[in-house]
Image (cartoon, rainbow, N blue to C red):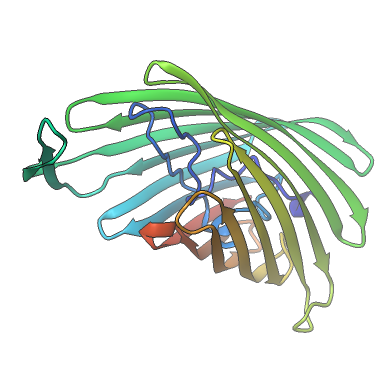
Length: 312
């Protein structure tokens, strides 16, 4: 059942969610960090990234709009029997735009010249199992975040950490129930301290020997709530159904869907969806490709894609 456990720690904050708000230009007014297309497709709820086995290398991209695109690379693996580490690097490099000016009274003062900006950063995530007894498994979570933002007239940087806990219970009949709690980021940027959000959620995953199409399959459903520093409440509902046997040789097909609530934004309820395929070989190697669509309010729909290699 280890390969069927649900986790929050091994997925970054979803591409639709601002995790560092009200921290000034030095850290980014709304940092849109990459997540895998798996999580984006299920309403931003992490249903499929478990206490994984083996090593995983993934590349993800999210197209916000024409010329505005995120890129990311993730490497994760075990560092002993209880510790698992994940390293994420990401970059946002939009095309240059025409600069505008304003007069002393705040009115439009003309335009001219090209204005460019870029952001890049990294996450280091650790998951340490502290309890492994009977049907229970409990792990502590920690994530360090760094970001550099280059603006036309300055370059700024910021750093933060997130901490949390995750608990899972195997209930028999191929079922596993997981709950998680994550708080942060807390840190400093632009000369001041901040804290971003608190996320709590629960998910159920089940593997069945005979699914809807007659063969082996399974499903996962989950929900989470997110309390933002500004006093707003966000949340998500998500589900995924797969055809095939996770962790075994052959093909596994995935169908995902979900909803995200984002109060205080131009699109309060945001439908998500996606699909994917995983090929596992007898040697233990595997290749997975996932696609998803994540609404970004006034910015429209952001298609996301993740391709990864799973090593033995």
